[in-house]
Image (cartoon, rainbow, N blue to C red; front, side):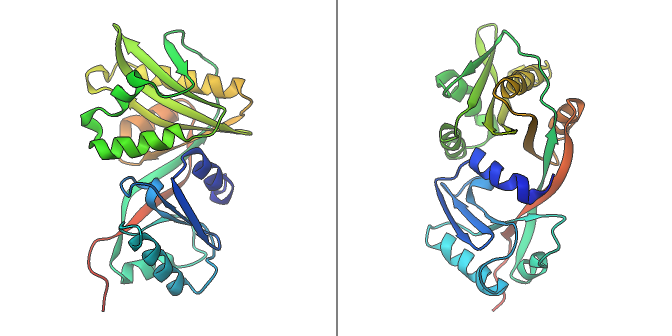
Length: 247
C-alpha cells in the first residue's frame, strides 16, 4: 500500500486540532507534544522551492510556540529532504512502522466496545507509566475527535480497567490506535484480545483492511501485530532539530 493512499486516511483517523498545507505537505499541530499530531507530513512536493517551504514550516510552528518537526517516509526519494534537513541540524527520531493487514473476526465478550472514551478507559490510557499528563491529554483529545464509525475497547481484569484500544473506520480502511495495557496486567494476552475485538468491530462496520503505526523499537507490539497477519507497508521517522541551525 502506498503512503500517498494511506497517509491522508491516517491523518483523518488521528486528527490534530490545527492543520494547514503547502502543496502536498501537510502541517499538523495540537498541544505540541506527541509526534504525528505536531508534525509536517512531507508527502510529496510543496507549493514553493523546498528551502522556502522548510522556512515556512519552521515559521508556522514557531508562531504556535512549538519546535518544528518533519515526518519523512523512509522510501521516499522524490526530494532529498533528509539531506536538506540534516544541513539545518535536524536528525531522525523514533523510526516507526506503518503496518497493514487483515481484519480477523473474533469478538471477545469481556471486551466492552464504547462509543466514547469513558473514565475507566482514560485511567488506563493516562497511566503515569506511559508518559506525562499533558501527553495523555493531547492523545485523548485526538481520540475524542476521531470520526465515526469508531469504537473504544476496554478490557477489565477482576473488575479493574486493564487494557484499552481504539478503532476508526473510513471506507475500506480501519485504523487501530491507542493500544495500551496497564503495567500490572502485561504479558497476559490482553492486548491481543483487545486487538481482535477491534478488528471484529471494523469488519462489521464494512472495512476490509486494517492499518496501524508502531515504533520499530517496540518489539513486543510489532511481534503481536505480525502474528495477527499485519506486515510493514513502509517506515517513517520524525525529524527534529538536535543542534542549532547553521548561520
